[in-house]
Amino acid sequence: MDKYVTGAVIKRLRENKNMTQEELAEKVFVSSKAVSKWETGHGFPDVSLIEPLAKALGISVIELLSGEDIKNCNRSSNMLRGRFYVCPVCGNAIHATGEAVVSCCGITLPPLDAEECDDEHRRRSKTNTM
Image (cartoon, rainbow, N blue to C red; front, side, top):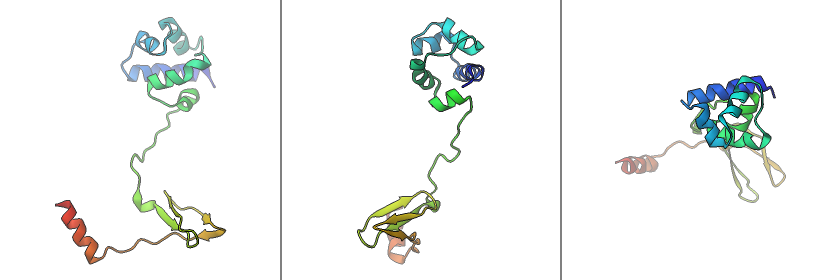
């Protein structure tokens, strides 16, 4: 945990949100002088302030402490990568968001293959969209 990196992150994120030091200070219940010390590397937020500070800046605690942005580029789930597994013994249905080794009741389950859309399902989907 490098106070200089974290101070730079605090300053950058604060400025990106068009927030003044005073506004950030009000959100985490400290003085603007404390925020200035953090940003210049002359001090570090108290441990009890890390979570509220991260929330005020709109980032995770890990991002704040590491000084690195963690971006999830895939904002929506890609259903094409999803895999379903059904246990033939107990009937448990398991969904994985990608390739996985899944076992249940002592056996390793193969992923189910997607079924082709038949005529009945095509008709239903056309009537549901209208």
